[in-house]
Length: 379
Image (cartoon, rainbow, N blue to C red):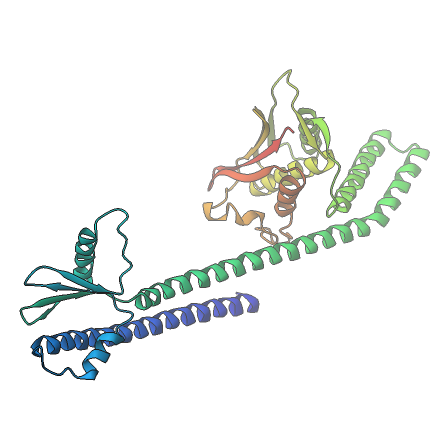
């Protein structure tokens, strides 16, 4: 784990702790307010009881009136046990769908679920529920947690986007530097090929050397294209794939058997940059040869699938664990001792970003082989 990842993890943990602490504290405040409201409603009930005890000519303490008038938040219904009449306070009455009596009865049932009713002697029964302030306080921690998780999620997305941008910059820089460094020796090799032709040195060998030097020129051109938006031209995909495989076949040990399955007499036109598509195929095939340790079978299939062209490349290599199906496309991932781990990452960039297609590990079984699937849109 890198230092940056450790700091990021610590920040996530601290944010989570702070959110939980705020939630617990808010719950504590809600409980205190509930207790205070229960005391207030009890005082309110006692005040009504005092009023009922006083005769018509008796004197009522101003404090009793003050207590009754001070309740401006707690919804309550007072039911007379003698005539069944109701009086209420702090209720938002809605009689658009039912009568007032039915509305109060429904409210009483809801209030019973929250708090047990208070009996005031034998004359009245008092029903009440929590005030709107408590209800808001109860929902506040949930809103706070949702907002916190949204902030964390946005932060993670932002970091990933930033990392991808950094990786793209790194790949572009390495690709262009590689192209630059290859330029001088390739120019020298081209000059040597011309000298071999002038000297009439073994034409067969000279021709093969020229093919490989030309291939180096193409590879350098591919590296130089990374970071630039390539021009896509409608091309017949079948011949492009056949040509790429034929080149690899001529440069591979006879222990590797190639099978190419391309629909006969069919033209599958795909907008593409040919050098980059060839590069993707070569990358996957070379990785397959390494996975098979130079001995096995490679099968390339081209499938005409509606609006898409599908390329499947299968090998009989050591396979890829399912947990690494996505990891293999990340820059730096490699199983080779001296690999850079950029091949499949660049292949994904070429297919996904430049050709608006998709590349995945379709299937893989340890010890039996792997199949990569490339999907390219025809339009």
